[in-house]
Amino acid sequence: MLNDIDINLLFDIAQVIFLIPFLYLLNQVIFKRLKRRHSFFSFRLMNSLFFYHLIFGTIYYVYASFNPSDSHRYFQVPQKEGKEWMDFATTGTGFIDFVSYPFINYLGFSYEMMMLLFTWIGYLGFVYAYLIFRENMPHKIKVFKKINLLPLLLFLPNMHFWTASLGKGAPIFLGLMVFAYAVKNSEQRWQGLFFGSLLIFCIRPHIFLLVAVVAILGILLSNKHIEWKKKLVYTGLITAVLLIFRDQILGVVNLGNSQDLISDFIAFTDKRADSLGQATSGVAMSEYSLFEKFFTFWFRPLFFDAPGFFGIIVSAENFIYLLLAVKLFKRNFFNFIKIAPVKVKMSLLLFLLGSFAMTFVMSNLGIIIRQKTMVMYFLFFVIYYFLAHEQMLKSTPKVRTLQIYPRKAA
Image (spheres, rainbow, N blue to C red):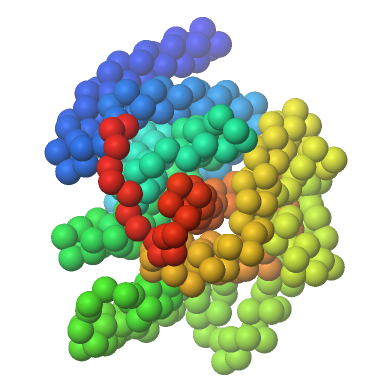
C-alpha cells in the first residue's frame, strides 16, 4: 500500500514537471503581447520572477504536506459525489471550488497540478504588479543607498509564499493587480477592468465593495477632462452594481438581513476578533488603539514576537515594510499627496480602507500575515511614486508639479 502511494505521488510530481515547460511557453506568448504594448517589458526579469515564484510554490507544497492547509480542502470538496459544476457557482470559497472543478474532474488534475496551476495564477499577479510600477514611474529608484526598489518589491518572499497555493490568495491578488493596471486607461482596458472586478467580487465581495468605493471617488476626483455627465454615468453604474449585489457583499460578514448595519457589524467584528484571538498566535486587537491595530496589521510580527523560524523570516520582511513606510514620514509627503495623480490617491485610499476593515476582524498573526498581501502593493506604489517625486525635485529643484519621466530602457 505504501509503495502504491509512493508511486502515485511520484507520478503526480512527474506530471507537474512536464506542466512547467508548458506554462513557461505560455508565459512567453503572454510576454510577447505585453512587449508590443510596453517597450520597457523585461523578459529576463519576468522569467526570473517565474522560477522564483515556483520555488515558493514548492516551499508551500512541502509546508502543506506537514501542516494544516486549506489547499487540501479546496482539492477534496470539488470531488464530492452528488455535486455538479454549477453547484459551486457562488461567491467566496465556493468560487474557488467552481474554478477548480473542471480541472480536477474533467482534466484529471492531481493535487500537485492544482497547486502548480494556482501558483502560476499568483505569478501573473506579479507580472501585472510589475507593469503598474514600470508604466507609471519608469525611473529606477534606489533605497538603502544602492538597492533597486522595484526588484526588491517584486521579490519579497512573504508575498510569493501566500500567492503560491490552491486557494483564494493567488486569484484575489491577480484580480487586484489586473484591476489596478486597467484603471489607468479604463476605456482601452475595459476587459481587464471587468475581469479584475469580477474576480475580486467572486472571491471576496467585501473587498470589491472597498474597490468600488475607491473607484467612485477616483472618478469624481479625477483631473482628466471627463464630462460631468460621464462621471455621473460611471458613478451610477458602480452604485447600481453595489445595490444589486448588496446581499452577497453584506453576507460575508453576516449582515445580509441586518436592520442596523453599524451595530451588527461591531458585534460581528468583536465576535470574530475574540474567536481568532484564542489561537496560539492570537493578539488582543480589541484592546488596542487604532494606531496599534494598524501597526500590528502592517508590521507585525517583528523579531520580538516572531512565532518560530518562519516568523523570523516574516519579521525580516515586515522590518523592510517598516523602513519603507518611514520614508513617507516627511513634511513633503503631504504636499505630494495634494498634487499626486488620482491613481496614487486611489492606491493610498484603498490601502487605508482595506487595512481599516481588516484590522477589526483579525486577531491572529498567522491570518494577518496572509491577508495583508491583498493591500500591501498599494502602499508600495505610493512609496515608489513619492520617492520618484523626491528624486525629481532633487534633480530639478524648481519643478513643483509631478511629471511623467521620459521612458528609459528596462
